[in-house]
Length: 186
Ligand SMILES: [Zn+2]
Ligand SMILES: [Zn+2]
Image (cartoon, rainbow, N blue to C red; front, side, top):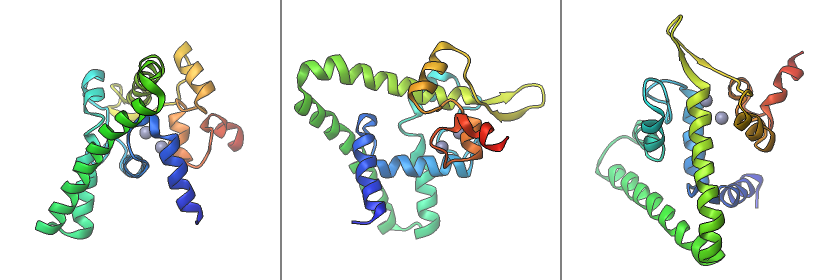
């Protein structure tokens, strides 16, 4: 087994709580970095409300991935069927993961641990993306921010390897904890 296969297995297990496959997460993440804050960004939060951004988050990557898929494989009946069958299995897999978790950990742990953990994950995921990409009204330019001000941001940065240091993360995607980028540069 090569290193990339290990990555895939570890990614699937670590990301189980997100209910989204590692492959889909990688694609969304890749396109977010390639085209941040444009219509080719799977999660661009500019000019929409927090609630709408949160509601669209599970589906917003589909359009970008579909368009890039057709760019590579050309749009025809066969590629249309392949893409939409994969998409169908993607959403079925989310449903099956919920059932699997329910069976594996039981009803009580599912209600007491999984549901709160999932809601916290969704809130943090949405808030990190929403609050670190902002439109600066002074010059009408989109800015990517490092945030470490509120108690929530400080706590999440502490347990979540500096995830709100998003400007630093865009400057260097390979750092495990982007909080330390400035130290690295100085
Ligand atoms: Zn990233
Ligand atoms: Zn970003």
